[in-house]
Image (cartoon, rainbow, N blue to C red; front, top):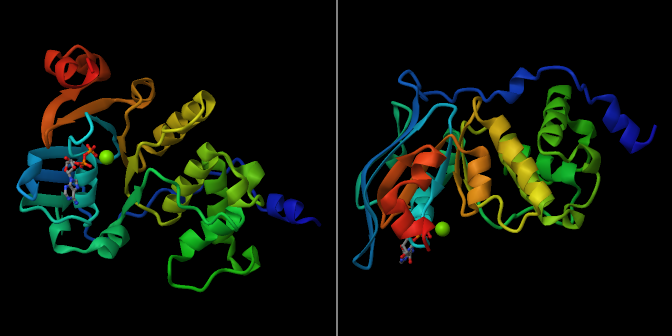
Length: 276
Ligand SMILES: Nc1ncnc2c1ncn2[C@@H]1O[C@H](COP(=O)(O)OP(=O)(O)O)[C@@H](O)[C@H]1O
Ligand SMILES: [Mg+2]
């Protein structure tokens, strides 16, 4: 049997894999239906207020788009959620019980918050499938040799994620040979291997072809429901294609929040952002 055939043999296409629905991490209390609470946050860099009394709530299972001009504080907000930056004041809670401000970056990742940076950071020399396997292993194991040692649940999981990220046919390609868009999907897949409940995604559509953008929109939409997804994006066509609720950040706080139509007709938003 070729490697390809042996891989195919355990791809079970029509089964629902309930292990792909993330386990709710211990202590993640979603009884109020809200997965993320950011309240009265403030951050200054050398006296400049990058985040200015920011309040933002993300519902369990929602797909939220965050837009806003350069310097609005979008990346800093993600840095606060993931523990990279500590605010000067305010609070950040993951569900009812998990105080993000008491935790460091690895603890927050383990608690179930995954972040995808703009630039894909896949292991170019390694195959697609090895990248996923490494992501599952985290740093608990040395570099995996072959998929043979994986148990069947792990193999199922990898295969299901290959499907979700549209790389089923490309599992044995070197990651370095993928297109830019495919590398972005692979990185999303690597995040999914860690079973996050909340995904933060920074400019997923940047540099993609139209077709890749459409597939990315589909991918992110399919993750919502079982995950909460927060997407920072500049491309307004892309935002329109996935958005339910859109938040506009400006000068470190929320300028407007609503449907894409409400946002596009909001006079203040037009002035500071869309009219640029
Ligand atoms: N580590 C830092 N040190 C100093 N200034 C920073 C730092 N990080 C961000 N800033 C400033 O804070 C503001 C908000 O930045 P950022 O969150 O990156 O905005 P956005 O992602 O919306 O473009 C910008 O004016 C930026 O220059
Ligand atoms: Mg940014």
